[in-house]
Each structure stands twice: as structure tokens, then as C-alpha cells.
Length: 136
Image: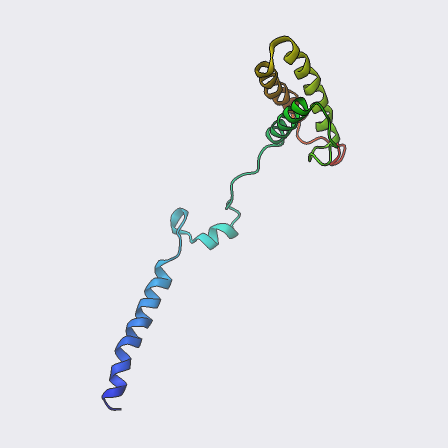
């Protein structure tokens, strides 16, 4: 080969060495030098944990309770994303909030909604998920 062949060998060799260094140095290491892919395959969580059902219930019931209190109208529980049991909690919370609003005003009613939704949802899910199916 002439000098033309030597000209391309240097850049190609450099590229091969650079690619190899990048490929071996890019892996995210985990506990005890374990690679990220190995850690994921071993069952270690790769995403945040799910929201506990009582927290989700309290948030969604409080949200829709406030909406119902403000608009003075109920919607369909399915369109709200509620189960039948959560909807029952919502109706109880709204009834209490309406009475509180008449007695003490809107801020007191909002505080009652947050507190009452939390208490009722915690009680509902204290033993895990209800067993009456997805609609309960």
C-alpha cells in the first residue's frame, strides 16, 4: 500500500479506540458495581412507588367534593374517576361541607373537606383494597 492507505488508518484506529472506550465507560453502575440493566432485571424498582390507595382516594374525593360544593351539582361517579364506595364518601363529605359552609364560611368548608376525605378514605382502605370489585 502507498501513503494513501496509511492516511486513513490513523483516524479509523482512533475512532475504533474511542468507540470502545465510550461503550465500556457509559454503563451506569449500581450497588456493588452492578450494571443498571442487571439491577433492573434483578427486580430493583426503576420507577417511583405507586401512590397508596388511601392517599389517591383522599386526593380525588377532596378535589371532586370541592367542585361539587362550588357548583352545587353532582356529576356521574364514573366520569369523576371514582368507585361507587368513593362516591359515597364524596356525598358524605359534601353534605358535611355544606353545613360547615353555612356555619363558618368557605375556608372552614374547604378545610373540613380535606380532613374528612382523608379520615374517611383512610378508614375505607385500612385493611387494604376493598374486596367488592373495582366499582366498590
